[in-house]
Image (cartoon, rainbow, N blue to C red; front, side, top):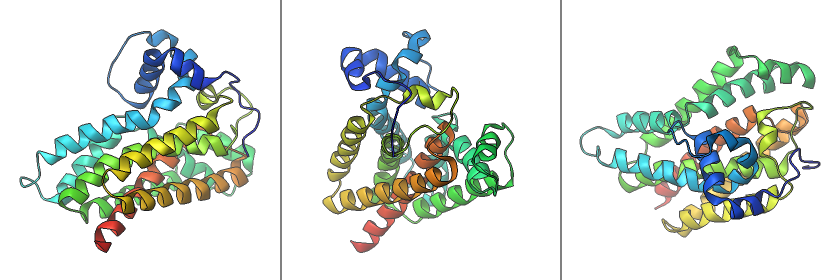
Length: 267
């Protein structure tokens, strides 16, 4: 379904030629941690920063898993689940939850494509958006709080990697939906599919260190969620927007958390 990307530059080549600038552009976008080196040039490196998204997810997952692991035995896993969710969402400034809320308002409305896109631009969150956020957060809490020990740490470590991998896989499937300028358009490049394959392989290799069964369950969760949600976005909106990319990150994190619950139950 992807065609005519807005950014015709070769993001992969730019990432190899400017690895630090590309990494930091992605890091600044995906986190609230202040790093200032060449921040004024981020627009030039957004498309090349995508290759770093799964790795940035790895850093987020590692830091969160390390922090919550220090609290095992002090707090019950139900509270650790809430704390982990806050850290994982807060590190991005709740960017992806905001995208989920806006996507809920647009995709769950009965309005035609043009009006749905306008609704998603509105800074106010409607009932459908709130319902989407509450449902996903409750479901994610239910999944994480049902885990314990190494399974809990595994989930906290893997889901941010999978969520950011889902963003680039979704971009490889869908064209950009808006006809005008948009922040999401800056991330598209002609080699997005290559970047998506590399990112997916990276995510699966990291997951395989925990177990081969986990790797297959995580792969299934990513492909099922991205495939189904991308089909919905294409039918309703004609492609992806920055909001739907944030939404697919949150939905994939939920799906992967559930998949790890299934793996733990099968052991």
